[in-house]
Image (cartoon, rainbow, N blue to C red; front, side):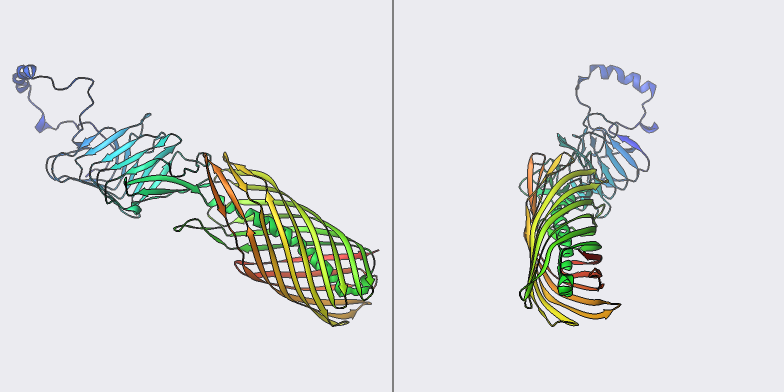
Length: 539
C-alpha cells in the first residue's frame, strides 16, 4: 500500500537481499565484459516494474495508492493479473515544462476513486492504461488541460465505465469557445465502453457549456463546446427591454382611464406626470437539447417616471377627444437566478404621441411610442462586461364600452400592443452575440369598475380592474459567434397570466387630479407587482 508522495518511473533502490557482494561482483565482471551490449545510450529507458515504492512482480499484484504519485515514465506491471486502486492523487509530469506521455503496461484494471491529474499548465500529456478503467461515481475525477492547440488525453486499452467527473484546466471565459463537432479528443477507450463513463464537472465557462461527444465507431470522447447558461440568459434581454416599453405604456393607459373617470371636469389642456416602480419575477426554461434544459429565471425591477401633455381634451358632439404627447425615463435591472447569474441594467428614454376618443359609451385609445435603450451586462465570475444599445418601437390600442354614469360605472376593455425590439451586438470575451429583432404582441381582456363620492368640494374615486393577458412572442433569437463557429438560439411563444389593479384618485374643485394605484401580474411563470402615483393639472 502506498501512502506518501512518490515519483514513479525509475527503479526503487535495491534492498539488502538483492545487493551483490563485492567478491561476487569481481567474479561476474569478466562475464559482463563478454556479454553483447543490447542497448545504446540514446535508446529510450525501459519501463520500470516499480509503482511508487512498490516493486511489481510476475504474480498477481494488487496495488492500492492512498497518497500522491507522480508518473514521469512508463511503469510495467509485468505478468499476472494486476490491478491498481487509486484513492489518492495520481499525476503525470506534475513539474514538467513539456508534454509527458506515460503508459501503465500490463495493467489489467485501474479503479479510480481519487484524482488522476494531467493538469500542469500545458497540453499534450497522455496517460495510457493497458486494461480497463473504472471510475467510482461520486468520487472519481480526471484533470485535463485544454488549449487552442489541443488537450491532454487519457487512453484506455479496454473498457471504460463507471462515472468520472472531468476537471478542465487552462480554460477561462476568454478561451472557452464553440467547437462544433471538431473539439479535441479527451479520452480514447476500447470497444463496449459506456457513453456515461465521463462527464465534465466545470462545464459552464464564460458563454460556453462544455460536454462530451461520444462516438461508438471510434470509442472516443470528444470535447464539445455549445452555447452555455450566460448565452441563454442574454436571450432574455430583449424580453426585459420589451417589458420596460410596456410598463411606460401602462402609465399612459392609467392616465387616459382617469380622463374617462373625470369626464367633462377635466376639459382643456393639461400636463400630467407619474412615477412608478415594481418587481417582476419571471420563470422560464429553454430546451437546449433533448438531454439538457436551461433555466433562465430572473428578477426584474423597474423604476421610472412618465410625463405627458394633453394638447387637446374637449367635448365633441356626444363624445370627447384627447390628443397629446408623452415622454419618460426608466431604469431597469435584470438579475438572473442561476449560479453566479449575470446582471443586466437598462437605462431607457422614451417618447410618443396618443389619441383618445369617446362616443356615447364607446371609447378607443391609441399610443405610438419609441424607446431608446442603453444596456450594460456584467458577470464578475466569468468576466463578462459589455455595453450596447437598443431600440424598441411599438403601438398600443385599447377599446371598450363604459356602462353607467355618475357615481358608479364599469367598463369592458380589450387591449392589444405590438413591440419590436432590436439590440446592437453584445461583444464580450472575444465573442459576439448577434441579436435578432424580437417582435411580439400582448392582448388583454377584462373589466374595470369605478365608484365616485363627493369629498371636500371635489370627487374621490376608487377603482379596480382585472384582466386576462396573453403574451404572444412571435420571434426572439440570437446568434453566438465564437471560435469560428456560429450557434443560433431562439425562444418563441408566450404565456397567459392574470393582471389586477386597484387604485384611488381625487379630483379637486380646481380640476387637478391625483391618484395612487397598486397592481400585479400572476400566473404563466410570472409573479410580482408595483405601485404608481401621479397627478394631472389643467390649464
